[in-house]
Image 1: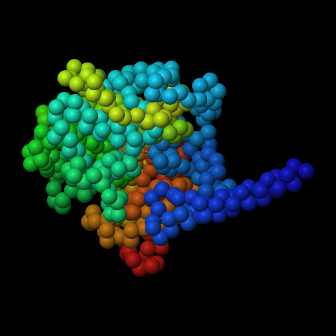
Image 2: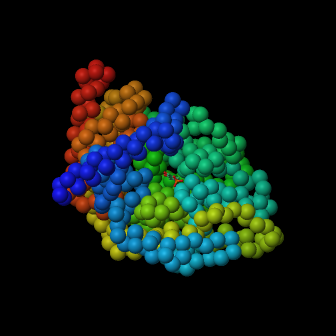
Image 3: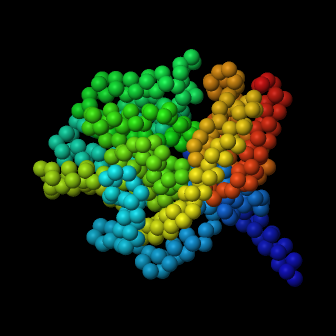
Length: 472
Ligand SMILES: Cc1ncc(COP(=O)(O)O)c(C=O)c1O
């Protein structure tokens, strides 16, 4: 009888999956679609998760290599997180932040302030990373308006950056392709080079490359005028741009120039925060900088609830308190600002991070990096780089060059397809595979992940050789 029921359940699940795929093709618009199949596309269906694993629509168990979108930090199916959301929802599921407040958001603010560097002891909560970046930038505009500097509004951003998908945050993006067909607030943005040491000019040392970037920054400030630049925004490690780890002194030197010129330094920690590098915030603990604002999202709730926020320096708030315009209103707020369920699950998530996950990352992170680095033995791999539990395998056509464009652009996708068959989801980015597994991954599971990735890359090399498009 049980066997019959299982069979029936299996058939039912299959039918449901088929339905979901058909419905998606008929009704769902996926993120980052191409015009040719927008609104008519189904993607890999996943039906459940557990720890570092996902189960796909065919019942196949996959390691969740990108941890969702860099966000399932505490792992899938954590009872404690589910319970925290349930308990909060049955106590107080929502309150208007316009004229009421709740306890979890106040308590979370205190806990985050304890982790944040220097005087960044206030928080504005948003619904995710884009709205956090948008909030930080609009706050800078408001701050300078109130301080009588309405011209000081331009924003410095860099090639390789990803800061979000709202109009202003999206205008900061600097990855190839992102903005080819999109409008942007270009009059507000001044672009700088990506601090990507792998792409430095041939023959240049990494030290000289850092000097070049700093000179470029200084020249840009001089040319544009410090009195016209309100903020610099940067990810400490550019995540979606391919895990770009800057040279050692770069961020500190940029921080210094910003301070000298009263340019607000916004550290976008949407990915690097909440344990990915072994700390709640990495700006100071890893890179030795004290920004004026830190944006965060994703790992703050381990992806269980859409929450983000901006840590804001006390000094900026006091400047506003003391300004000549105490009646000026920061006309900015979201229906879900300070959401009680989001803040409750973030509190429980912080308990988990402080209660062992951060220590675990310090232990397993170096092992992950060392194992991943060994993939540089493969002739298709130009560089493996990363920090903590974020890493990138970058493929190149010719190991003597760092030019990815000579190579079939779908190489990341090809690797992903092989890895999927072998039991691993990777995040393909043109010629790169980005890895950011759930932070609870063990060393044995790291071995599994890297082993599958090695095999996926080897199979891709075989394919490319057979097709005659690559002979490495
Ligand atoms: C560094 C960074 N900032 C901002 C965002 C935007 O966050 P969200 O997708 O939650 O709006 C992302 C998303 O990947 C990100 O990586």
